[in-house]
Amino acid sequence: MRILQASPEQLTAIDRVLAGTLEPAQPERRGPLLMRVCDAASLLGVHRATIRRLMLAGRLKPVALLGAVRVRREDVEGIANA
Image 1: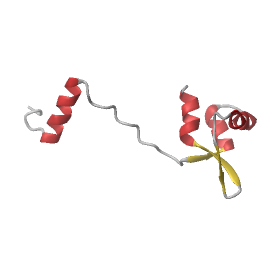
Image 2: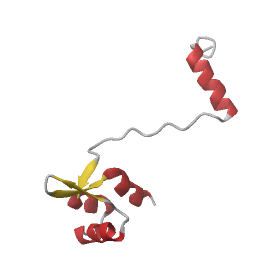
Image 3: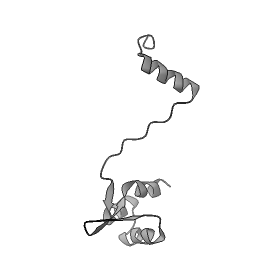
Image 4: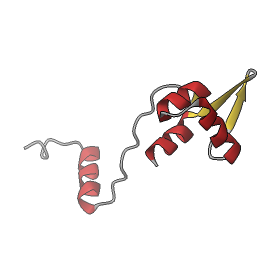
């Protein structure tokens, strides 16, 4: 019954799901885009020195911001999910 009441956009989305061509929805990002080194360390459960070593190794790109160093949240979450 609900399919009969669906809008044209909803019917198109249903067709794409059934055909297997619907792209998965990207999760909504929450929080700041840049993180302090201590916050990144806390998220990964490591010491701040480990975050600095990851930056030196090139796995995390440091971002200079008003005289402080930050790292991109997306990069830290990528390491956490790896």
